[in-house]
Amino acid sequence: MTYSKLLFTAAQKQRRTALSYRSDARGYMELGMDDHAERYFRSFDENWQKAKRLLMRARQERRVERERMAG
Image (tube, rainbow, N blue to C red; front, side, top):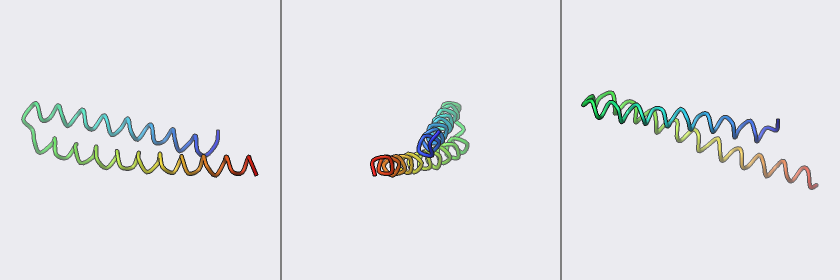
């Protein structure tokens, strides 16, 4: 498995974690537990940003791998 594929897989896992936090936050909001919802929305945002960074790194690494193969 190439490094770019590993990064992409990690980004997908991070994204799923973020979406899970968002789902939990919405559930807490429906229950009127705004303090918990705020914490979970913050965790969602942090994990979503990490996933975006991992995806960008995976794309950059894929470009480098293609250049190595071509050159």
